[in-house]
Length: 195
Figure (cartoon, rainbow, N blue to C red):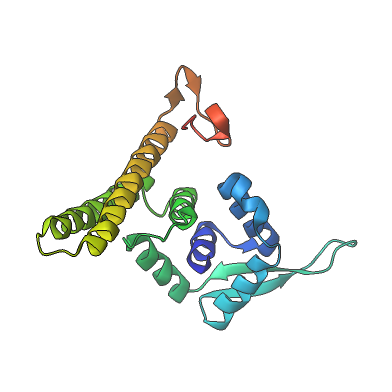
């Protein structure tokens, strides 16, 4: 969560409420379960670590003062490292999804290039796991685990293909004869009509 928040701040300084709204929007229905206070706890930790700064902004007469958060140079460096990272998340793919959304929104990196780098890493892991599974000396119980890892990697590679299709279509000026606009939704409520 911390890296996602930092990447979202790379676009421009923002209020905590705005960041929370952008995160919820990027996650769609999965964002509904996000605790409203989580963004503020994350921002406090990032400030304590010296990755963000905040300034008080005068509120409206009916609202208290708010804080505007911005990246420090250390925060900018951490975002760059995070975007270059090719580690693969555990069963929850939302972090990688948010990496793509944040990179595109702040124009930090090309989402298709991030997908491609991740695909290369997963293909390397798949190749290594398949080699290990083919070893004749592998215990059948270990072989079962390796088979599960292979199946998971194949499913993750299929998901990356879907990500690439969606981000490629999103970058095109027109999709199926209709202009693609910010926030437009296609089939099943997914941006660009991806399933």
